[in-house]
Amino acid sequence: MQGFLEYVRNVWLSPLPLKLVYGAFIAGAFELIYVMTGRMIRRALAPALRADATRDPSDRVRRRRFVLGPPLALNRWLWYSIALLMILRVFGLPISAELLPMLAIAIAVTLVIGKNLFRDLLAGWLITYEDRYSPGDRVAIGEDRGVVTEMTLRTTTIRTHGGREIVFRNSQVQLFSNEGPDQGA
Image 1: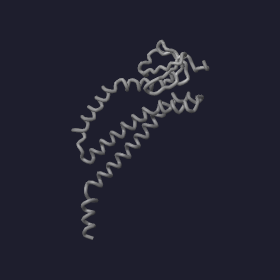
Image 2: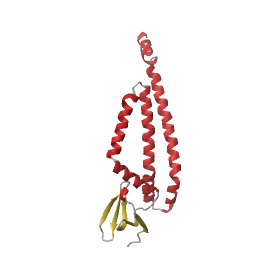
Image 3: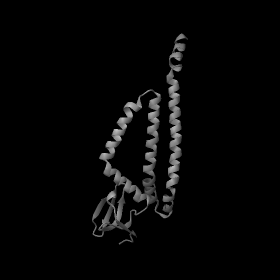
Image 4: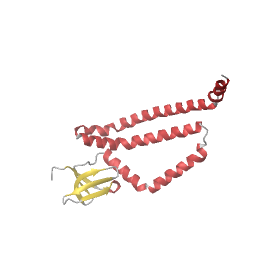
């Protein structure tokens, strides 16, 4: 019995259980914030997706994934990162002195190295969000004309009338003309 009382005094009357409760509370609060902001993002982007009702189901799913995916992933990364930093702080880790400067340097280096990639991804997201064109549409990008065969957040692929496939980085798509869906040309 004495060993059990010693165990209770050393473990359950120590600061650790209180820190675990605080950590769980922070995790729960940030999960609630994440869910609420996710709903707000979905609601804000819903008007752009309503026009898809007449499209082929696979096109609707692709566009919904492109339009909703990046903002929801950024939302999740942001709130989970803040929650993790707060939980580390509760457990006594000095996040402001060592971790935050290293995180800021890592983000800056990533942005510098991946500047073109981020530019392509943002341009691809805007093309999809604004529904400028989609697979099957006849387009003219610069001096090249053809049918869009594939779109990703990074690239757009068109097939010219001669059968040649051209891949454009989305940040390169400056001037284009959407000639509507291909009618089996």
